[in-house]
Length: 334
Ligand code: ADE
Ligand code: ZN
Image 1 (spheres, rainbow, N blue to C red):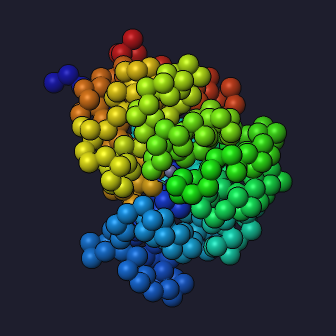
Image 2: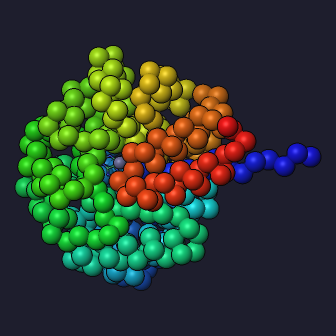
C-alpha cells in the first residue's frame, strides 16, 4: 500500500479562548467551585443555546467558570495541544479583558496565564501561538476603549493584535475608531468581526473606520460584488469559520456557504473554528469538510495555510519558519 502523505499543516487565526473550553473542563470547574450548571449543558453534555443571542449568553456563563490563573493556563495548553494534534503549526487566540474581570482576575494575570499555557504547548508540540486582545462590541463603546487601553498598557511578547468581537448588530463601526487608533498606535495587528450577522454595510464600516487588515467572518460580503472586489484589491484576509456559520444558522448547509465563491473571486481565505465545542467543530474538521464538499486538493489547503501565515500577527522571523515548515511538509504538492 502507498503510504498516505501527512495532512497539510494548518493554521488558525480565529478562535476565542473561552469558546475553546471543552464541556468536560467546564463540568470539572463547576464541581470544584461548587457552582450549579443551570442548563448550561444539554442532556448530551453539549453547550445549550439556540440562536446568536443565547449563544453569547451561554459563552459568558461558561467563561465565568474559569477563575484562577491555573484554570486559564490549563485551557490554553489544552486548546493549543489539541490544535497541534490536528496538524496545526500556528494559532492565534482571542482573549478579552472584560472576561478576565468577570472571572475575578486582573487582565495581566489572565493574559500571563494564557501565555504560559501557549508556551507549555509550544514546548510539548512545537506549535506557535499568539494572543489577540478583544473588545466586546455589545458591552458598549467605553468598554471597548477601556479594553484597548488595558491592552496597550499591559504588553506581552505573545500579545500581538487587537480585535472587536461580540454582536455586530449593535453599534456603528465608527464608534470604535478611538479604540482601534489606540491599538494601532501601539503597533498591534487589527481585526474585527463583521459580515457574520451584519451584511455588506457592516463589513464596509470596519474597513472604512477601523483600518483592519483582516475581518472575522466577512462572508456576507458576497452579497455585494463591488465589496468583494474591494476586499481583493486591498488584500484583506477573511477569517472564515464555516462550521460556526452553519451552527448559528447564517447558512443552512456547507454546500451553500460562500467560502468557495469568495476564494474563486480572489479573496484571501483562511479557515478557523471560532468556538469549537460550542459549534461541535475543530480546525481539522473545517479543513477536511470544506475540502470534501468543494473538492479542494492539497495545493488549495496549502494556499489556505499560506494565507493564514501571511496575514498572521506575528513577527517576520516566525513567519519565515512557519513557511519553511509548510514547504517541507508539502513537497508532494509542488
Ligand atoms: N464571541 C465569541 N464567539 C463569537 C462569534 N462567533 N461572533 C462574535 N462574537 C463572538
Ligand atoms: Zn469569532
